[in-house]
Length: 102
Image 1 (cartoon, rainbow, N blue to C red):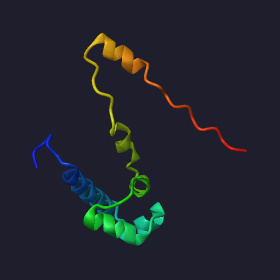
Image 2 (cartoon, helix red, strand yellow):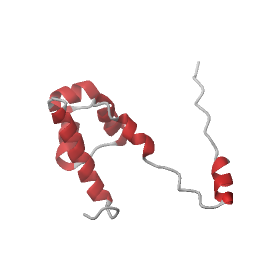
Image 3 (cartoon, one colour):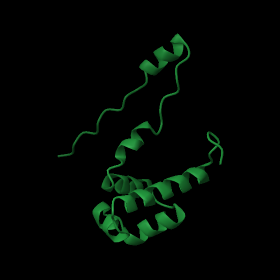
Image 4 (cartoon, rainbow, N blue to C red):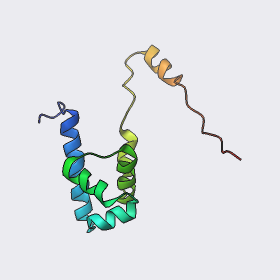
């Protein structure tokens, strides 16, 4: 695996391994993390073995291990190189928060 040339499969393996190592470093068993995150133990085991997990479950695991901050930089805007690109990024639509239903 060359830096900057990771495939989706490479990244899945990296994330799987990093999550497992963090769980172990935090001194948590799989059962404890499953309970703390609210995901089934089988889902956690499948993730740690194969790297297969839904985004919702991955976020729950990250939250339970105090690692949500890493997701904020997941899809950064491309670096603007011209004034037109800066202006276009400034005008990107921002979705309003969903209104609460009564």
